[in-house]
Image (cartoon, rainbow, N blue to C red):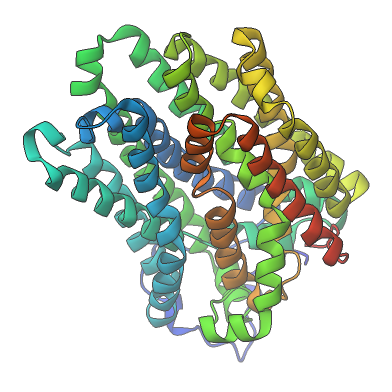
Length: 449
């Protein structure tokens, strides 16, 4: 869809603003044309802030929470407990999407986005103030679980539709390129989080880190959320964005309508990206926990390795846009799913291969993740008509995270600890097979959205 200049001289005579066109929307409204580049900036800022929140918690769930909240058990069991609570946010995400979609229909997009990011930010900073199990007992664990659920609800509600708007406004021959822009937030957010924790682990004593050092990234996450909120509100409050809403291009629909008419597309979209989402935590959260438990490698050294791996993943994400535009999204995702299947067979050899093997595992894993995850957003939205794209993209992404990534750390660590790393290979292989099966069913998935 081409962008349209929308200023005072072009307002149709019969145009009537929708009820949600007033209030907060008009505060930041500015006339003029919205270019895909402008939308891309909002997408990258929004996603990077959310992923930074995500990875701050993920890294802390390995380095901090087992000792702080589960000191009554051995390190392995405590980490598994921590990963169970880690999964709560992914379980809560679909509920957050539904709740805040209702808020948008009842009030406005600005009210929805502000409320969701406020919930996400306050629950994130609330974790920084939590007492330890030693001082508060099981109350500390309950509060951690509640804040984690609130994070998931807020993250589900923070969907702003900007990636869909970006896809609708992208040039026909650059759909793959623009689809990957929102995915840059994942490696960028992880790089910042991993670098911050690596610096603190290297420069603080273990007691200082567990006492107060780990809390600092959560405060930073809250500050970044505030900046990202205003950046995103500035864009979603424009008259052009309002026009798209009024044309019902990107408005929420009820869950019953979506499930009745688009249920099949939700399932296929979630499974098509399954390999990417399964790999996501198997190169970020899981190996960090495995190295901490079963390797003598310094954690700050491994975090810096992951930092550089994420940098390689960022470059691979950029490359995925060029590759998808050249060969098609379905071909790109299918090829990467097959490569991830091959990579899964080397998990035990590489992780048990000392520093050299671990280096290869992280760098190759992040490269494959960037290439595949770069087009995952397009996979979950490609089949939806404009009317269902806004709600469909949000819920399909929620389901992809839930099925592919939510339980990956606890399952992978549990399997590797009790049965060996070979079972982690089978777990990752199952994700790749799921993607290939979904892509074979959905032969229509090409660069068209």
